[in-house]
Amino acid sequence: MAKQETWFTEYQTDALSLGLRIRQILLAEETPYQHLLVAETETYGRLLALDGAIQTTLQDEFVYHEMITHVPLFMLDAPKKVAVIGGGDGGSIREILKHASVEEAHLVEIDARVVEAARRFFPELSSALDDSRAHVHIENGIDWVKTARAFDVIIVDSTDPIGAAAGLFEPAFYQSIAAALKPDGILVAQSESPFLHQGLIQQMIRGMKTAFEVVRPYVAPVPTYPSGYWSFLMASHRPLTPSPRCRSEAISTRYWTPEMQSAAFVLPRFLEELVT
Ligand code: AG3
Image (cartoon, rainbow, N blue to C red; front, side, top):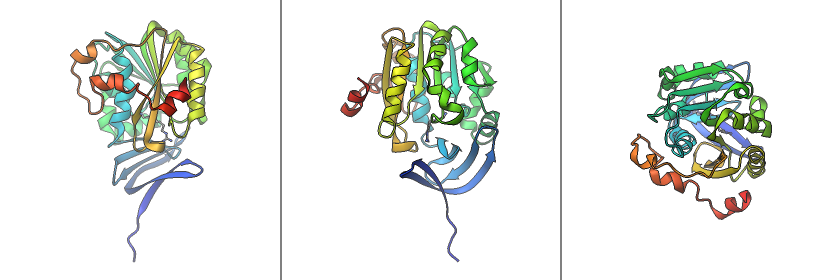
């Protein structure tokens, strides 16, 4: 009998997919919000997918989590209060807590089952949630930001703009974030693939410009996300320049470097043209 192979396939568009051979399915469940899958892949290690979309694999999560957190935090001399909307796996909180000045790191995740699955299957990411500076809120991020105040950095670590996450890509949400930030505070949101989601990136930039003076895209490779090339948008009320702290404060990273702090904003021409 032929050896049975199991594959996880993400249908990234209706004409493009990424397949990963898996050793074992560890959890497959329907939560009140979405389908949640945890599986052991051959190539990228343990994987978490929501509604068939890869959120994290142990082998490449460091790129995404370091870049969505350190790039905004190192724009500030002493970020103290930081929030992550989404990101129930805990990877972003883990990176934020590497900054000595951070006093509070809030995680606002709508789906308790994501946090539970992360605590059970991804201790590498979720153990940061046990830190005394970490605060977990199981709540809709859109409602939560409406009453949040005096944050230095708010990070939107969302899934794709469908279902519960759609509102996280709307101008009204960016306006609530602007009100929840200090005057020199920074918003960062993951903004999908420059190859596959150009219209969305432009729409997000327009939305952010209704609430912020400055909006700047930056990029990083994330092999298991659609097209493997990912973008982020950073917004603030003032010009963004790296704090000297990005060279003096030694934090342990695998992708981010002080040079990357600036290099990530160097865009290929097609993307530069898309965003200007
Ligand atoms: N945020 C996921 C980005 C979207 C990936 N999209 C996809 N695979 N279709 C990640 C959450 C990790 N903390």
